[in-house]
Image 1 (cartoon, rainbow over the protein chains, first blue to last red):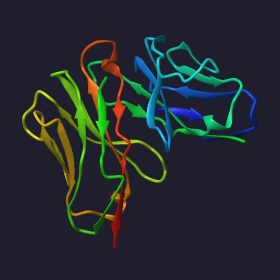
Image 2 (tube, chains in turn green, blue):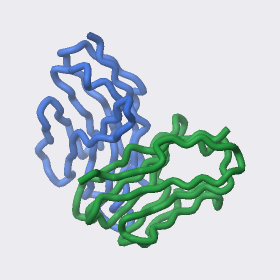
Image 3 (cartoon, each protein chain N blue to C red):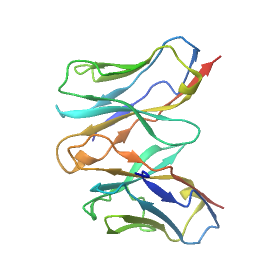
Image 4 (spheres, each protein chain N blue to C red):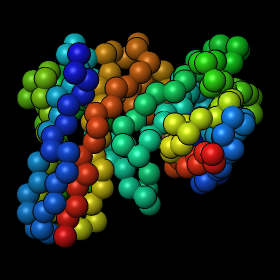
Amino acid sequence: DAGVIQSPRHEVTEMGQEVTLRCKPISGHNSLFWYRQTMMRGLELLIYFNNNVPIDDSGMPEDRFSAKMPNASFSTLKIQPSEPRDSAVYFCASLRDRHDYEQYFGPGTRLTVT
Amino acid sequence: AQTVTQSQPEMSVQEAETVTLSCTYDTSESDYYLFWYKQPPSRQMILVIRQEAYKQQNATENRFSVNFQKAAKSFSLKISDSQLGDAAMYFCAYRTLTGAGSYQLTFGKGTKLSVIP
């Protein structure tokens, strides 16, 4: 298996622009997570899906952030409009099922908003 | 809410020596998982070791072992025979096994480990 795939690996955009991050989980995994990593706040959960349904989005910082999972093999995290404070590394992770223990992380997307 | 604390922002160790990274957590749950993840400069998150709270025996994976003290809510990672490739950020993480939050990980702020040749 190719593991969790994220694209793009790097994104540089200007303030006010829309940014879309993409994730393909491992085939057969039922849960998908979006995390954000910054120096100040560390790794924090933004949202997670189980069987394509959002379960907990309490970590989404504001309405500018939205996430979708239209099918079991694809998810997006969108920021509109982007701001410099959104600059971070965004990770996607997947979990086979709640009885499994290991979340598998993608390589992350480094977002820079200027 | 659960919290995870790593009190050592940075640590260093001589190659071939042993180092211990500290982690404490706060929870009212009795059943949960604890993890150590490694993040090298490539930024890929790699699972190093896990511990189920119901198990009294400390987990071991080759040169990596943990000291799990449930009553004290402490979960330290010991790296023996340190190698240059062990240099990375290390994150302690907690996962409950009950309720809607039983899927997600709560991370500490991390410890940056340097290995001195």
